[in-house]
Every structure is written in structure tokens, then in C-alpha cells.
Length: 477
Figure (cartoon, rainbow, N blue to C red):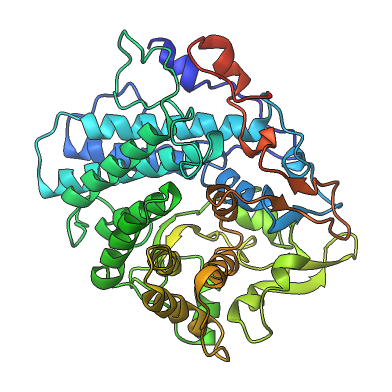
């Protein structure tokens, strides 16, 4: 195995110190990267390994969803904490900090697994196409995540340094041994190309026999299109975001919950859905033992050190169903009043809360925003109100226009997608200052992230920079 493996996939990363093992061990179903893929069964095993890699706590299992709100303005760390992610809470992270290292390492580990699946020399069949389509979509999702954490937004600087694009499954001579960073635009081009490829070859009805279940734990045709709608929105390509989201809405068959009891049941359930209600794609989390995934960070039955900010809590009306996912209560261990996040309540359940990657509500909000930004405010209000009036039964709907309508859409995104790791990317793509007012009983914070703050970008891991002279560190690190 040649040098790129050690450059981009350094196995010896020291993560932030904490009182328990922060990294989950890789599942036995994960296939070694050097193992050949010769049969459909090999391909299916490799796909399982790819999903295992993606839900590692260094990537979508914890770091991505938690940091996406912690670095923004939705959550903060309690003064009573276990020492996890504290440098992110107060913006003192550096090029050797564990969380950025983990996202980079596990991101490229996931991409490596997807590359092997896509390039496997197995003749096309409906089953093979489904498995390769899933790999295209996971690779795209991972690149989209990496470029948002480590590079400037496409809406601001499309020609800026992005992240290295690697699509080959073997480590040959040439630039791939020590790759340079591609531009942000080039990374988005790859993301869109991969998602188009996924949508093209994924079947309308997933094939279950001898592969895996057909529930929301696996990429489907319209999950790929929903992720593409997100990518176009982040890119600032609102016409294509609208087209992609509209396909999901009109052809995907997804629905929202329509009652308070159904909404509550949706968030208390730890199982995947096969009924296309609310969730489009989520990663399975059946971890047992000390680490409970997101619930460990949010639930008071776990460590529960991630608390909701007062500013977010105050956005919800008393009749908003989503306010029920936040408890105005007492932080365990110190008796301090706090707004407790109850979106991930299954810390004590052997089957933990699923990791929501993309939900139908986000697609409706993408459609609303893309219509508003392309001049069709009537359609924008229509899709915005489809969500807002269901979530708040006493609300009669938005009637705003112009900038106020756009502000309303972004605020609905904040309320709906809170604690799912997307808030930071909204603030980045819209080029907004991040205001983080001091919170009662909080670990020392960082009150304002200006538009020129170097820590709007995560550092390229120092180990990567040390062994790869072609890769440029982000400014200031």
C-alpha cells in the first residue's frame, strides 16, 4: 500500500481527551481496503463496510451533527461536562485538534470504501447498480461534508482551495500519492456528478433479496436526489436546487407526520422507517455499551453536556410541536436550570437513536428557499407553510415577502433542523456573522465569529500537512 493511504488515511490520530473511548471500533462486517471485490456478495459486504465507516463517531456518528450546531448558535457545552469538544465550544481548536482530524480521516476512509465499490469489475445488473448507486451517493455526501468544513463556501469563493478529490481505488503513481487540494467548485462538480450517477442507476424500488433491508437506513433513488438538492442549495444554484427538490416532493412519495402524537412517536422511536414518513435517509445506530451516539451528548440519561441556547428556545411558540423536543429543566449532576435537548432520548435503549442525514422537511425548506431566491414567492410560501402549519397547529401561515420571507425560511430551517448539524453550513453559505451570546452555566465560549475569523474553516490535520507538501494549510493555522 503506497503513501496516499498514510497521507489521507492516517490511522494514528489522537482525538480529544475524554473520560471514555471516543472512537467506536469498526464493525466486523467492514471489508479491508486491500480485499478484492469479485462477486456480488463481496460488493454487498463492501457496502456494509462503507456504511459502517460513515457512521463512525468521528464522522456522521457524532462529530458532524454535533459540531454543525456547536460551532454555530444552537447549542453550547454545560459548565458541568466531560471534557469533550470543549476546544470547539470556545474556538481554541488547532491543526492537531482531534475533531477536525477525525472528520478528515474518517471522511477519506469512507470515500476509499466507496471508490472500491464503484470501480469493482462486476457486470451491471439491477443489484450491482443499486449497490454502486449507494456508493456514489455516500461518496458525494462525504465530499459535500468535507468541503463545507475545510473550505470557504461556494457562494463566496468557488475558486478557493477545497479538498483533494480522489476517485481511484488503488494507489498508483502520480498526483494521487500526495494530492493537492482541488477548488471548491471542482469538489461541487464531483458531488453533483456522483449524485447524478447515483440517481441514474438506483432502481425506483430498492432490491432487498440477499443485499440489505429497504428501509431508511440505506440510500434510495430519491435520497440521492434529496442530497443533490442540498448540494445545489449550498452551491447557490437555486434553479437546480428547486428542480431536484421538486422531483423528491412530486415523485419520492414522502410525507410529514400530521399529528402531535405521530410527531412525538417519530422522535422517540429508535428504529428505521420503511413507510417514507419524515425520514429520507438515516444511519443505523445500534451501538451498545458506554458510547450512546448522539444521545450520549444530548440526553440527560447520557452525559447530556450539550444544551440548547436560550436564543433558539425562544424562537418556538408555545404551540410549536418542536418545542416539545426541548425541555426547560435541570441539568443532571449540578442542579442548574437549562434547556435540555430531548431529540435523542434513547441513551438507555440498546437500540440507539438513528442518525438523521436528510429528512423530508429539509427538502420542503430547500424548495421554499429556492423558489424565493428565483422570484416565485407564492410557491415559496406554499412549501414553507406546508411544513410550518403542520409543526405549529395554531399558526395560520407566513404571508411575508422579499427579505423578510427569506429570513422566515432560514429561521424555519433553524427551528426544524436544530441539533442535526446543518446550522453552521447555513450561516457559512449566507456569509453571516455567527453570534454566540454567553449562556448561563456554560463552559467558556466564544461570543462572535466574524466573517474574517480564521476558524470559520477547520484546519487541515497537521499530520496531513507534514507528510504531503502539495497540500496547503488553511490560513492562520
